[in-house]
Length: 321
Ligand SMILES: [Zn+2]
Ligand SMILES: [Zn+2]
Image (spheres, rainbow, N blue to C red):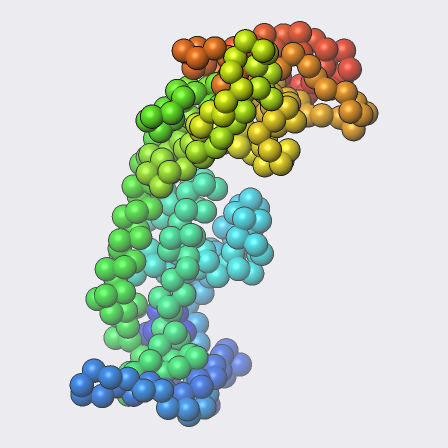
């Protein structure tokens, strides 16, 4: 086989100097578009030859390097193989959008940014030229146009609009600063358990209701409220730490409070403790009505004796301040 094949990614025509570089891809059929706008699939198995152009090879090598340099991203994306594909897609999309080198640098400067980028842009596998051909040749007229005039020239205007919207969302996320949010209006002004009055979150997370969790119903009587407080249920919200703790414990109760407070002071329950309860813990919602919310989790309680007790057992981790 000699001659020219399209780059499987950017779509430009590449002179084939070495037939072993050809990648054959199997197309299962093609879509035929009718004048009235309707489409139909016609089964027609056929193999198409693709290659990787030198510029796309460089981007591939860059994706491999980035995946190696960011183990946390690799882990979050599930596998090295998938991470490289998602990073490649992101690099391709950024190049198709004419993003300048500085923009590439910003997007790949931290794990968090890289994760956001691969989530938003990395899923656009159809940015690749070969996606027009495999698994189905997308429209009959495309099979007559074997390659793109210039890099990414095969991308439709609609596709570019979608990519650019995702890029704008990515930049907005990068520019975002975390803010402190109070619990949703109408309920108690602190986390039902630890009493913290604000949760710090990105505004975009808050917008989808992610800063506070709930609503939940809690029974103050079971949360350390002595006899002086009525035992009627209170409805309110939990901070993310207390929600995780109640999920781990299976209910909003003493076990959950213990997990949350130990987590806050940087410790965890040891199996050596057996059934022994920490004791002396009360949830904020079990305090008399009108008690102001806390600046820090659990500050309605004196956690010093607890820390002392735990440190005597050698259970407080070194990161406790
Ligand atoms: Zn290419
Ligand atoms: Zn809490």
